[in-house]
Amino acid sequence: MQCNPSFIHGIARVTFLKTLGVTITNTLSASNHIRETITLCAQTLHALRVLRCYGLPGDALQTVYRATVVAKLL
Image (tube, rainbow, N blue to C red; front, side):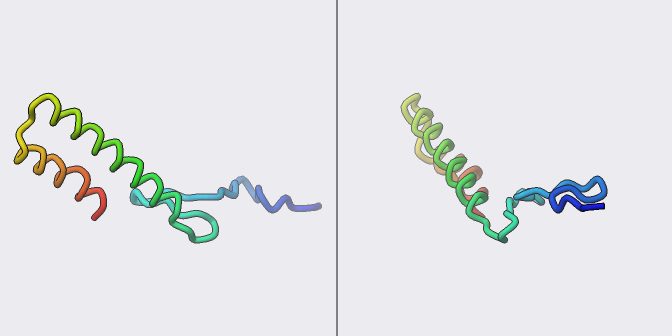
């Protein structure tokens, strides 16, 4: 009987694992996690620009920025 290394006894081998919000690949790289985080922050910055165009005051923009972007980065 020959074993398939990618599927042993009902357990599938995966190339990445997302646990506690952090994505880690099978090579212990966090590059996918960093890429996703940067993408989410860029989307949030675009939303903040739209809110500024609609007249949201600067102090409110700062509050939203801290609550979303800074919190995500930390």
